Image (tube, rainbow, N blue to C red; front, side, top):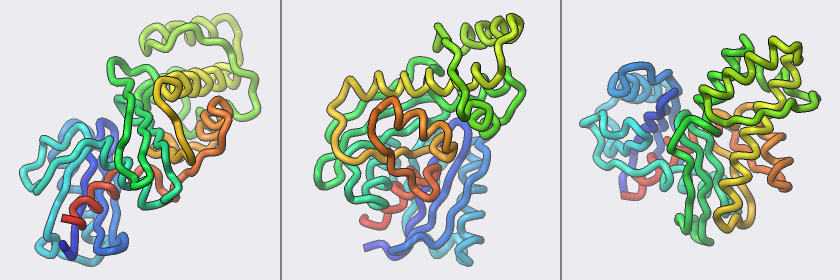
Length: 255
């Protein structure tokens, strides 16, 4: 069994790394930017510094995320579906469903009793229902992603007819021009994301406890709205953004 493993999750918006040797020894999150290869190396270095370890100590490096093709240092490349499932199950063995809202796709993953992937569905055809969609919509309202959640808290959601990023942006500009409040629009944006996830979940057999992963799960207002639409509580890891990288590190650890 490998004694020290690293998992690197190169996403479209952020790159994450976890160092694992039976427990998490180091972790890092950096912006992916335009150089996913450099982001992967930087995240690994920062995680190693946090662990007080040198790169030579790592016996196995597993890559995941859309940018997993970017680094030649990977001993193995694994889909984010498998890695999010593995990381979520490790953190909460009661997990039977994983919801992940990534930068460029959203996914609902169903696990069996051993934590292996039994079924999944992805929205990866456009930015609708993704972190990128939220980022663009927050920009239209001139707030951060966290600020979007704060605006939306306790507001009655405005109705948004489009989930297409381009059309939704135009629709929001029109609503602002018509005098609609930013709070109502922000609440409408979060509701549209939750409806998208609800639609995905309805296409698979959602079972047991649901773990919400990815950077979007750090936003408590988004978590609350998604949970309300699904009608069940969500398990939110302490750092949901790292779950995919943790899963990759666990796969390396087991090798």
